[in-house]
Image 1 (spheres, rainbow over the protein chains, first blue to last red):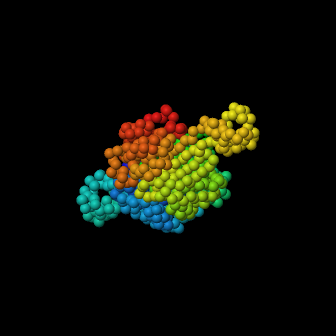
Image 2 (image 1 turned 120 degrees about the vertical axis):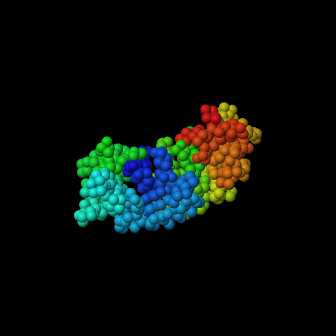
Image 3 (image 1 turned 90 degrees about the horizontal axis):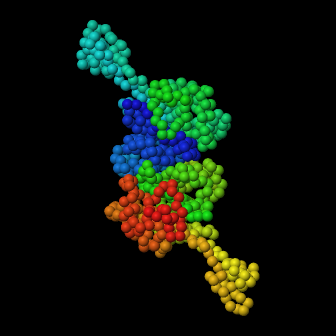
Length: 314
Length: 314
C-alpha cells in the first residue's frame, strides 16, 4: 500500500526525443489517477506497463494541446478494450462541449459512460473524495483557464492500544465509541481522552501538481507542507521575462514557491525544448530549495512524509 | 536520389507496445511527404530522425482518430520550431472545417500558412504534381469517406546518344527539338525517330497506400503494375466477415488485390492488436502473392522497379 507517482511526460509544448507531453499517473493504494493527457499518453502507459483499464479518473489542468491531445485516443482505446465502467474526466468547464463534439466528429462511440466534471478556474474546490483521498483544485495563472491539483491522503482511523482495552475492561460498545473518535467515559464519570487511548502509525501524504502557470502564491495556503510539489519550470532563471510573457515559470520561481510552502521535495518539469541539459535548472533551483530534482520519465516515485525516498534527493 | 518509404505506424485503431497508429513518410528525391498522421507521429519522426521541417505535404486518408490525432501536435510543433513555409494538408473535404475549429479551440496560432486541399472521396483525382512526381487519389470503401494515394514518378527526359549528334551533325536547334520529344528532320526530308536517337536509364517507380478499406477492385486499373502496394490487413483470412462488418480487409484480400494488380511487392499493415504474431498473416498472404512482407516500423524501404530490394523479399 503506497502513494506512487509515475511521470509519463515532462516536456513543454514541443516534445523532444527524450521528453513527452504532460501526463502523470498516481497510484494511491491501487487506485489510479491520470493528471493531464498529452499526445502519446496511451503509448507511454503501455511502455511503462500501467494498465489503462485501471484508470477511472482523469484530471486535465488546462485546454492546451500538450496537456490534452492524448485523451481522444485514450478514450477510444479504452472502449476498444471493452471497458464498461464509467470514466470520470475533470477539466475546465468549456472542455466538456469540445470533448463531446470532437468524439462525434471522429466517429468515436464509447462503450462506457463518460462523466464530465466541469471545474471552476477562479477558486479552489474539492473535486474528488473517497475514504482514503481528497483532491482539490489550485487556481493557476496561465494564458487560458488553468488549474493545479492537490492530492491529499486522509488520516486513517486510529487504533486503540490493546493494553488500554484490558486496563479499562472496555465493552464492545465502548470500543466502537472510541473508534468513532470519542473519549472513553468510565462508570465513575471520569473521561479518558481519545488521544491517550489510541495510536496511528500512518502519516498522510500529499502531492501537488502545478502546471502551467506563472509564479503565483495565490494557493500557497493550500499547499503548506505538501510532501511533494511538482511545479513547471519551463525556463531557467535568466528567462524570467519570457516566462511571464508566455504564462510560465522559471526554475528559481518554482524553488521559491517550494520554499515558501515548506514542501518536502520539489520535482521540476515541463521543460522547454531549448534545454538539452536539465542539470543547470536543477542546480539553480537547489540554491533556493535544496530538495529539488528533475522529472525523469518512466520513473516511479514513492511519495513519503516529508518528500521522496532519500535515494532521489537531488 | 531515391524513392524511400519509412513506416512510422502500422497498428489499427488500438496501438500496441510495438505498433503505433498510422503514418508513412515518403522521401522522393529529398522531397518529403507524410501519409496519415496518427497519435505520436511527431515523436516517431524524432525517433527515426526525420526532420519535421522538411515536410511540406500531408495526405490524410480518412477522418478516423488513428489516422489523424497526431496532426494537431505536429502542426503546433512546426510552428514552435519557427516554420515559415506554407504547409499543405490534403484530406476528405469535411476535415478542413474540423481542423481549423480544433486549432482555434486549442489556442494554436500557426506562424505559417496552412493550405487545405479538400479531396473528393467518390472518384480518383490528381491532387499533386511537380517535375518528378504525380499523386492521385484512390477511392476506398470504409465506414467514412476514405482515400488511398498513388505516388507515381514521372519518366525523366531522355538523353540523346552522343554518337547520334555526331552522326547527323545536329545543330543546337535540332538538339533542342529532339530533347523536346520530336523526331529529327534531316535536310533531305527524311525523319529519324525520337526513340532511335535517345535513351533513358531511369525507370519510374510507384507506390500505392490503401488504408482503411474493405476489399475493392474499383481502382485496380489505377494501380496496375504498381511497384509497391501497401494494403491494410487488419484481420486474417478467417475473419473475413468481421473485416467486412468493420470496413476492413483480410491479409488474403490484400494479397488478392496485389496479384490482380500485378504489383511488384505487397506490404501488409494496420494490423489488429489481437495479433501478437504477424507471421501467420504474411504466410497466408504469400500463398496468393509470394512477394508479401509485413510493415516494420522505423524501417526505410527503397521502392525500386518491380518492388523492394531483394533482401526484403519476404
